[in-house]
Image 1 (cartoon, rainbow, N blue to C red):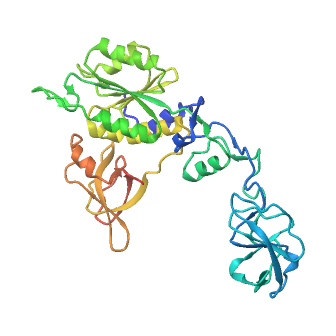
Image 2 (spheres, rainbow, N blue to C red):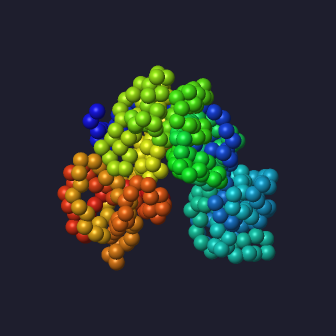
Length: 404
C-alpha cells in the first residue's frame, strides 16, 4: 500500500466524523468550555426596571434643562431598596447605581453636578432627558434567545447565562475516547521494568491531549501482545459505546504487531494506514460503524505528533468545537537540507529576533524516541515532501505545540 499524504489522510478521517448530537444537563459551574445543545433563552428581563447607571439624583429632565434649578429632596432609592412613591414637578430622589428609577423620573443628575441646599439640591449642569438611565430590558428580555445552540461557553457567556437565571444548562455530551496501550515490553509508571521492558508513557500524553481537546477518556490500561487480550479490551470499549478507540503500538505488520489483524478479525473496517510523514508513518485509521479507530505508533514522540495532527482535530469535530489553529510562519535559524518523500515534523525551539520575527531553531538530534526534546520544543518545523533546501534566514511553516 502506498503512503498517504498527511492532508489527504486528515481529510478522509474528518470527512467521516459526525458531531455528537446527544446532550446532558449539567450545573452552571461545570459548563466552562462546553457546547450548548439548544438555544438558551432568558427567564427574566434585564434590567427588570429602569435603573440608574450612576450615583446621583433622580428627577424629571424637563424640570432642570438649565443649571441653577433648585429641587426638593423627598427620599432615597438604593440597590435592593426602591423609593416607594412618585416624583413630581420640582422634586428629586437621592439614587445610587443599580437602583430603580422612581416613577415620574426619567433622568439622573450626577452627584458631582449638584450642590446641596437646605431642602434639597441645586443643579450645576444642564440635564438631558433620559441621561444615566438604563431602560428596562436594555440587556435582554424574558423569552429572548440570547445564546444560540452550538455556542461554546466561556467566562462571558456563563455570566450572561447566570444573569438569565439558569442554574443548569443543556450541553452536548463530550466524545469519549478509549485508550489501550499494547506491548509485552510495557510496564506502568512506578513499577520496576524488567531487563527487556520500558515504562509506558504515551498513554498519559495522549490522554491529556484528548481531554484538552474536549473528550472524556476511558483508559483500558496496558494490554499484552495477545490476540485474545486485545480483542477483550476492544470489546470493552465497544460495550462502553465510546466514540473513538485509540490503540498505542502494534498497528504495523511485524510478527509482534497484532493490533491491526485483531481489529480486522473483530470487524473493523480499515480505511487507511501508513502515512507519508516522519515521525508517525504507521498510523492506522478505521472504524466499527460509528466508532472511529486510530492506531497510533507505539513510539511516544510519533504518537504525540499523530495525536496533534489526527486525534485532536477528530475530537474537536466530534465535540462541535472550533479547530485549534497551530499554524504559524517562522524564520529558520539554521540551514535545512532538502526533504525526501515524507512530510517531516522537526522539533524546534522558538525565539524572537530583535525585529520581532519568530526564529525556529531545530534540535540537533531528531530521533523519534527522544521525549525530552519534544518536551522542550515549542514547535514542529513542517518540511513538505520533496521540499527544497532552505538557507538560514528563510521563512518556514511551523506547527505550534502550545499555541496559547
